[in-house]
Image (cartoon, rainbow, N blue to C red; front, side, top):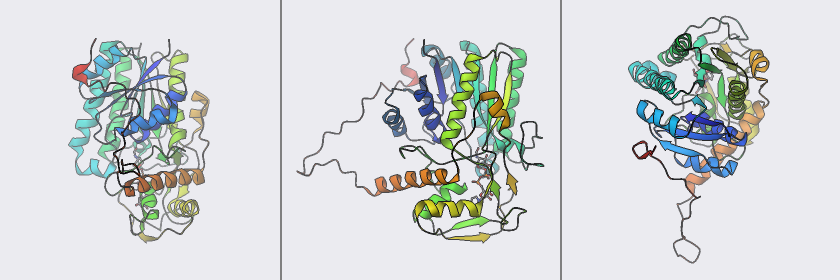
Length: 372
Ligand code: WQD
């Protein structure tokens, strides 16, 4: 029987790429998403990319009854937990929002998994748990030291998983610590299009290239890095997604019972802000305006992963370089911009309304209409 994976937050930026790679790898997939920070049309685009169906439940991971019903109804074998808030700055401004959303979501999911007898979990964690790294590259045994409420929720959830496994050794989990996910699917049908002013570098550079922002503000030019600007380990979101498939494959094939592994997902190569801007200029074909301004509070000078444990444990490593990350991000932003400019024309040249025929949609099974 084909294994079934529940992807909470599966319509989001990371989630949509993870679901696409799971489907391409032959898994059955159910998405649970409340569309608070994602677009329902992404589900249609995932089907268009993969040619496969994906089940969708519109609901909230914090609703334990819904989660348990979904786990049982779809006979879920493992869960990839991606649903949650992820903006560092927002978490500093409103920590209780982050504790409420991210921690309650994890408590609800883990409780529902226990109730439904689903014992395999891949958790979307973050390199933010390392805070400002003391030594580089960062290994999984590096000291954790959270510097913001968002990172604290990731660390607390990892530790919740530890305690759950200590109480119930039939459970197993892999927490994937993402470095800096960027880029988009090669079809440009899915990618990151944040609402409002982007916090992160890549979407901001892309929107500046698209003419939606005047210039990139480079936060700090006096760090101890090759050109004085901040260095990060950018990883193509498709490489990141394939890392999730490798983690699921490991959980399904090996006797992981009682294990909770933390695994870095990064490339092992760092790039500075100015190198990103230069690579993006090459991808879009014209220079991108920027200005060097004072540092952003809380930023590390450099953060680069040691990816060797992911290779050893999952047989996975990143394959895409910075140029491909920029090319795919630019292609995605260009498609979105073109689509936004396109009037929603459903009229044929003869002026008659076109019959709007969306892809065949599976029934959107809202939680209250789930049937046992
Ligand atoms: C990258 C570099 C900035 C914006 C955060 C979260 C992390 C993860 C990824 C969720 C830094 C510089 C940025 C800009 C700039 N998110 N920069 N101008 O801070 O490394 O990580 O996003 O999991 O948890 O902490 O990513 O893209 O914000 O910054 O100069 O407008 O770009 O100083 O050196 P960061 P980022």
